[in-house]
Image: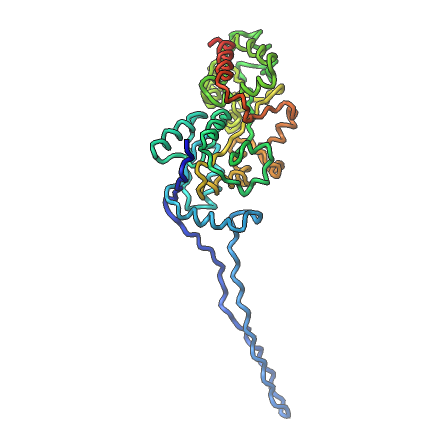
Length: 397
């Protein structure tokens, strides 16, 4: 498939931000009155008052850091000419986006940012369908499906853009050229406090709990129907191997309910419909606090926490999309997403971010963080099909 043509991004209204510094009108200091002349002296002429120098106009501050390219203004000016807005297909909620959206539009008020909350695979399916029919589609994609990303790249759909923030983020966060990590979010355990008094903290604990309480109502991602769920189990089992499968077989005795969204898992646990949830995305859990504190408990998974990477895709590398990619990777963008319940990873915001990867590593040990990656085995359909078949059998599907 040939690479898509560059999309035009839009701004519903082009707004010129005119910045200026008020200049004071030049004034003179009133001359001091001369002393009365003595009879024998001629009066001295007073000095002519000196005109005050008009203050120099100050240069408007740039809306980006000093280390950005010298010609970055060209991207900004070009974005003002784009007239169809900035469309993002992502797997994050409005709450997750709120602070970032506000900060971005404050910097670039002529850009109308629209973010749709879709499923992990749905972002690609919708993109392919719309682009195939020449309809308006996403300019940036944000999702956590490494298998679908690899297919997307192999199809030649990825436009190239090296972010102005590229050297400020760690090498591991750049899974492929032009593909960046938005955040590194843990998959955690949740429990209903009224129904579970001593909540499990590890997968071994969970297996032991289910062994003693086989009627426990457990909820997790459906690995067959949800890309995030598939990736969680894939990478966790890559690390834990057969020992991991044995733990899942024990947990499977409870016949866990499979969900396609973390939001559904959280809501069912809050309502008491399910008692325990595992491998639940933190981005749907943490924004519920502190309101959820009396009802729901959560914890890291001490013997292996999968770390979810949110990846931005520059659909066709237009100017407004470049601005958003750079903003997401900037300090402000990382801090904004941390406020929205995502986990920042940029090293220079570790002491400022509400949630940061370094804090997770300190809690459970870096060796227990299991990152997603572009695994070549994900391209092997036979291996993927065999994996799903075993997962379904393990959980009694």
